[in-house]
Length: 256
Image (cartoon, rainbow, N blue to C red; front, side, top):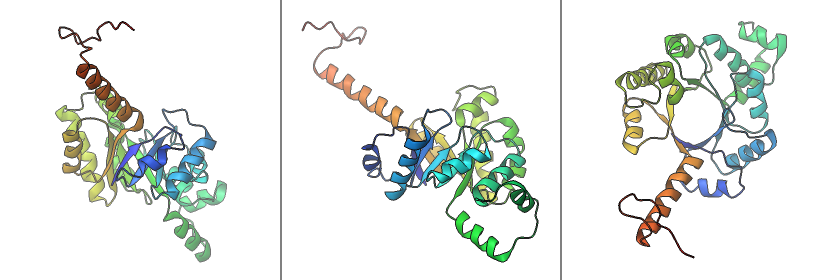
């Protein structure tokens, strides 16, 4: 499954994105300032165009998870999860919605459920995904317990934070980082759970994650893709017009 990071709320963006051969879109509210109303418009629009929106919430907070689901998200991505208990709490918000409070806690603790309520919750939960970010050494150490929590649909590696946790900041080609990724992919797939990564590097390295076992790839993002493409074309135009000084490739002085 292939997606990309979308942070622009422009109403012209969804129509362009839907022509790119993607299976879903990833909307980030952890690192990007997106208010609730435009976020909901984005979710509703992408969903209507057949691109399910997966929304990363600012923290692994069950109440934040229910908020984005109310806004139209098809799934929740919770950042920097390191314990099975965090996943269990998120499961309650995503899979047992709209239950809250004591009734929800009883269900999470294994209390018997009325057949009609169980059927209702199961039907609704089938359309909502629960995904957690694995982006630290403690998360990998606890991965077996995390993967054992019922209702978890996928794990997603956060490469920047993971390299920092490994003491290898932004060393995305380091064998220790790649081995950690492969461990996450292998364990998740063995548990019957999706495994992915959000990455923005070269195409060959993107493909290598799939060969290592990932089946969920979030490729780059709208800002970075726009920047790369625009930079490349502007440089090409300047070169074609002879506006680069060959010795230092800085723009030559232009007399207007």
